[in-house]
Image (cartoon, rainbow, N blue to C red):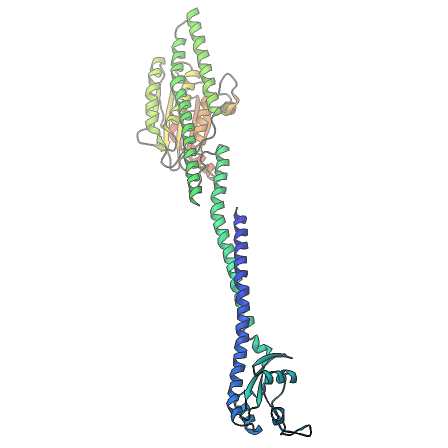
Length: 477
């Protein structure tokens, strides 16, 4: 479209320039010619009064010299016998004619002008001549010849044509530039709209189109952005639904499993435990399928997030009741003051429930656990630790958290936690806790971007110091 507009504007402007420049060039040339011959007529008219008074050569030469055109002017006065001399015996009687100046015109042209009595121009080598008839007092017709060189006829024509050509070229170039800018103004918004559609189709839900350009393209951009917002909202609702399923279904199932474990022996108890286990597997399958089918969503916008301390206190209020039933000691640290993180409240709650559910599921009754929160300058650290037997192969556990699902575990809990941390540029580490069991360390980046490698090491060392401080200060009652 851009080049089409440029070509159309180039063709139209060129036709307009040619239609006006050629006639103007011809008019300029004719005006220069008329100016040159008008000057010649004025020079010839300056000599005419003297010719009507006298035909004396000396006086006429002085008049021609005073006219300032002695080099290009000639005066041709005929002999008396040429007009009305008496004839005797077939011979014309009269004085000789007078010729002043250089004659350039042909004698036949001079005779024709004298006979017709009208001014005339004729071509001569190097230019043209103006032949002006003048009546003498004797009744004869003299001819004043004024030479007009070709340089005078074309004086200023080349300059005028050059100016016209320059103006025409400037108009063409200017029109092409304007057409190109107009084309860019129309094409760029359309290209951005196409790019935005491709990005949205590839799952980049943060893709938006600037609302600029012509009215139609602005309206199209508004409609596209509105559609993208609706898609993001629908997918966010789906994500909230998956998190809600994890929160509402897995946590009660953990309680049911623990209660079923305390039923003792017997066919009914075994059937109950088997039914709870099967139901838990089915729920895990449904939730895992929903998370895997969910495309990558856009990052949280400015101002999005929650208070991590408040969420930790709320979830620990739920799990503490189960801990008391099983005789588990527990503690919470670092939740005295608000700790803002760029994570949705439901996502953090689902991650905590997943980790605490693993503690209750994979450790024996009476095993202590703790949750610690630290608010650093550029990151927030959440530590979930227990006093169980620990994890023999942390790398394999993290691999299950990336979707490999083996060794009797679905890996769904660690997958939830990993997605939470990586959405902020952080990560998850599994290690040994001071309680003697497993410690899951969640690094939540506050800046919303992945740290550089060097800074990553520095932060990790800083985190180690912070964790060491935690470990020295943590003690279960």
